[in-house]
Structure formats: C-alpha cells, structure tokens
Length: 267
Image (cartoon, rainbow, N blue to C red):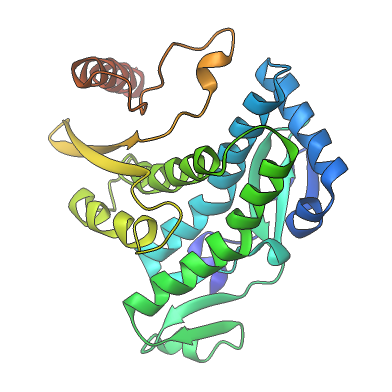
C-alpha cells in the first residue's frame, strides 16, 4: 500500500500553507510572490538568488520521498505537479510535498501492488526509472524550471543544476540514515539511472562520491553549476558541493561536518 512507503499526506503545521503545485506553476504573479517571500526568509532581495534557491528547495521537497520509495520499495508515488500539494512554512519556504491522489507505479510481479487500483504496473526496472523521471522531471520540475526562468534572469542550466543537486542529495541522504538500511554502493549505481539518462536535462550536472565514515560510507554531492548561495550575506564563498571548491578543502570540510555529527550523536 502507498502508506507503507512513507508517502502518506504530510500534515501541515500551524502557520504552514498548502498550495497546489500545478496551479502555482501556471500563476506567474503568485509564483513571483513566493519567490520574494522565499528571498526575505533567506535574507536576500536579489530576485535571481531567491529564484535559484527556491528552485532547489522546491525540488528537494518534491523528490525526497519519491527517491526513497524508488530505491527502497520499487514503488514510486506520482509527484507530477498536477497531483502534488506543496507545503510552505510561515516564512514562505517549501517544507515538503504530498500527492493529492495516492497513485503510484510498481513493478510487475509485485502482487500487492498488482491488486491495488491506484497502481500503474510497469514491466521492469528500466521502465520504473523512466516512469519516475517522466513524472518528476517532465511532469513537475521541468515546468518549474521554465516558470522560474520566465520570472528572473536565471539560466535554465543553473536551475536544472539545482534540480540535479537536489536529486543527488536525495540519494546521499539515504546513506546518512541512522540504521543504514541502504547500501551506499547500491545508491551510487542507482542515482545515475535517474540523473544521467541520455537526453535528460540533469545529465552530467551532479554526481555522488563516497566518503568513509565510522566503519561505513557516507555519500556527498559534487555539482557542476552554481546555486548563487554565495551571494547571501552570511554564506561562505563556496558550498560544500561547489565545483569550484578544491578537493582537499572539500574533504577537510566534510571531515569537520562528520566529526560534529558524530559528537552530537554521542552527546
């Protein structure tokens, strides 16, 4: 059942607002208001910066659960914009997304899914990844990129780079779960199947790389485009995933982050 895949509706917290994604993508003035609200929350009045960072936050909210379901259960919720409600917090930042109707895709041979009228059964793994890419990219994030590109002086490649980083980050996040239910080596193989399919606009824009940690492996993202975060007043010159960050400095900063995380876990 869809609820078993951690895709049951996300309850809005007090002060949060639910907004249909498909409607927002078609209403330019409303989308611009969202961009400006996000910019205020992030501490910038630059429309280009706010647009870029909103794109990435939106993509994170839409893709995280879908990626976890794809990798873990081979069942993927339909997160096309026409079937997605976005949650915005009181400051105008995307805090999650949930499907309107609990439709999902599953593999042939999944007996429970085959008996579920909400399921679309696909032939094999390749078909499931293609279905996921179609719903997420063609059906949601592609229209998001186009709508934001029309609003602000931000290039499509930069926006697609943010989408790629968000998707890669979804795979990386699975490697950081406390009980480590996902094999990092498997995740390293899965991510390119979604990101780097021939002709996909995210092809070559982000990749995962492994870092040994605590007897295991954590995955981190390296990207090929800039998200413009450096233009925030309190931001470092380069993000951890930035292509301009020297590898030695990247490794050093990752080590500090992992050490801080381990210290927090042990109290």
